[in-house]
Image 1 (cartoon, rainbow, N blue to C red):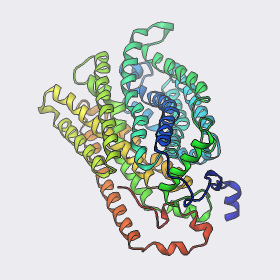
Image 2 (image 1 turned 90 degrees about the vertical axis):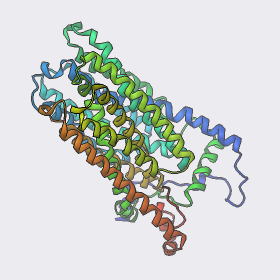
Image 3 (image 1 turned 90 degrees about the horizontal axis):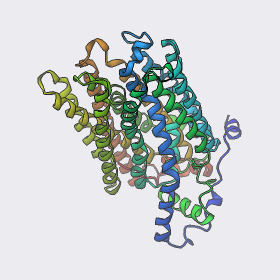
Length: 489
């Protein structure tokens, strides 16, 4: 069985990445390190951030299309809209782990741009479909092709940066999804004036134009998306050596570059992956609820569709700013847990206001949407980075990222079905379930923090040193199970 794994997944030789032993290496040149970080920031983040913004716009633009006549033109009624949302997540959940294994063997520039090109075509098809069944099929295919993009990007980013450099960079990347909400509202507002062009209603042009833009950017993305550090063309040999040295020194021998039966068992039996998934599941429900239903909620506060779309823009701008400030703080303080709980508490206040909305002014309800959105985007990116920080080795990080995002996105299925049409505009089930799941996230974060702290204590006392007696090839492939690895919380 091990031989089968070795043939299927070639190991990565890390011996050639470094010159000299740790004892003979010169101290790291801090000026060169700063230049390297700037170069990474300029080459790794901008392209995939732009691409992911388009991905998220293509995913959530159905919310803006809804208030511009989508349901009427496709003869939708009852829970049809919710079903169209829900069907997206079935392939999205199932395909993420296989996709992250594929991307490890394929150049990210090729795989990610191919996925993007495919979902861009599907988005255009959503704009020309003539029936509700056609919309459902397109949403299913959209989920299939988008599935591998987000975990692939998170995996790629995490292979370039050290632990406490990662949250700021990842939140910059993740902020593209927050800005996608603002861009989607602004774009829908502009496209509303295209009703009648080509015989199409305005909502169709939302899909058509955004889909065509995605296709064009995907073709260009092939030439700008970075590949793995081992093969990236923008690094010279000295920069590559410095990059790997920095990562190796922090990893403390926690490598997992071979996927065999023993390493697979270690991955699948790691409690941290499943608690990390619960963290993400609990908060991502709020993230999707905001994306899918904010235009509808704002319209039902008594505003026109156009005004609702415009007033959704500052909500996302404020959330983006708060998320970035939080990222700086959590990296500089080298702490994650307290910030996840701050986000949970902020969003909780917003949900309580909306659950009692019959007795509060409309302006207070609008402010509640700010609180929910900002709270969600404080916590959500940290849950992803926090788990990645505590995964050692290529394959461990690849699979854990895909499992967390894949299974965690079941929160999107929940979000798609709890805002029951006949309960509008108060949505007691929607807001109540979202609040409950938010606190599931809070509880999971607490368990995760406590578990990491206890495990570090055990390693400090030498209670995991027996693993060093394993065969050398297994010790070299322990990942974060290596006794010298310490967890971040």
